[in-house]
Image (cartoon, rainbow, N blue to C red; front, side, top):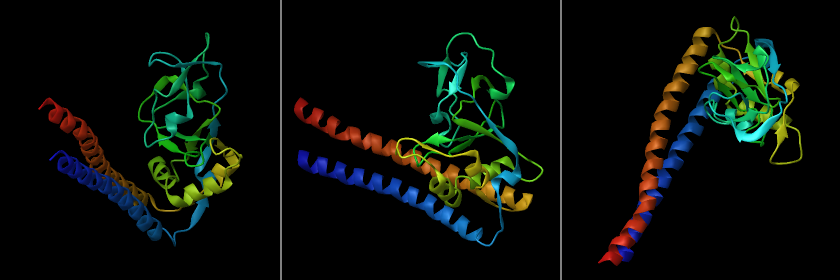
Length: 241
């Protein structure tokens, strides 16, 4: 009976893992479909859509994570994922009055210039003001010319395979754990030229799709976590008897 129960748990685990793989595959296919739709759209270098790129600086920091009310310098992990993570910051050492341009502000489009090959060039949009968080020398602010392009549209296309391929192919460094991209590489990323209405449509479609996939993945991960706890519970009940 115990072997049979554990075998059923293993089947359930495989099914949950398959669901997560299918969700990831759907995301990849959706991106491929979007890329196909953009195939014949003309491109311009990203730099033509920006007022400029603002760099942070190298600050003296402790090895401690900065508290929310403490001045902190962004780690690259703050911009490595799908959302800005203000808690990923090292505390500034000593007393320091930061330059206003180094403070993180609502609406900022931030890109990392150094990370692993898969994460270098990761980009996020900041949802709130964070006056206690500062750009580091490894994080850059893209100052978007909003008369030409919507920031959220750039956020979307900079995550697509075409932009990622450009970034990864032009990243420098021999260590797999740390690659770098220059401002020249960032400025030369190809961006499909769409009207504002087309940009909004693409943003909305991606946003809706990503929300739906996030719910599926969250559900799948929760199910997998519950399943992984079952063998221990089954064994505990068996030995209690």
